Image (tube, rainbow, N blue to C red; front, side, top):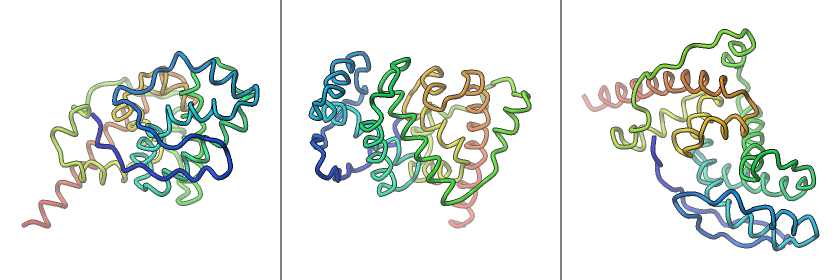
Amino acid sequence: MGQIGPAPGPVWPWGNRNFCPCSSVSRGGPALSDDTPLIEATLRGDSAAFGELVRKYQDRLYNTLVHLTGSPEDAADLAQEAFVQAFVKLDTFRRSSTFYTWLYRIAFNHAASHYRRKKPTASLDRAREASGREPVETNPGPPEQLEQQENRAQVREALGRLSEEHRTILVLREIEGCDYETIAGVLDIPVGTVRSRLFRARMQMHDQLKEVFAAQQSGEA
């Protein structure tokens, strides 16, 4: 699934913190290998250095969260919370992953808590993962080309019907373009679980799209 489309950027209410204002991130995504000087400068007390990290990642994080939550307002709030938490807890960053992965993990943890508060649900995926019974990954369809094949509004509607876990992993893989290792780091799950959860997410997305299209056709009849 390619980019569904960028969401309009928010006005970032950073308060009195000396964070930098919004700035666009290239479509190819931010470079991940040169954050160490900015991290070290921030730890030395240079908040403007953290502003550079904000500028580097905020638009991409915001747009990903829009696709995840379906709400620009929620996405802006969650992105702000993630950056504030990253700033406050930067001294706990062990650098075993990239800053990008660590930031996204914070953001998605906030998003998960947000969804649990709004609509508590049991996780069938987690029960399956705990049992050790994981399906072999196959290809149920061409989700990478959903954007070309289907109307964007229908894709968003179908995405919004998915469980939190399935929506999250599809956003990371099909919209954000993360590899399995990055997804595993963001969600703090094994790579094998990424594969099996993505398989089920694609199946669920396929089923939801069929329902969306059927509902639309019956409404037009």
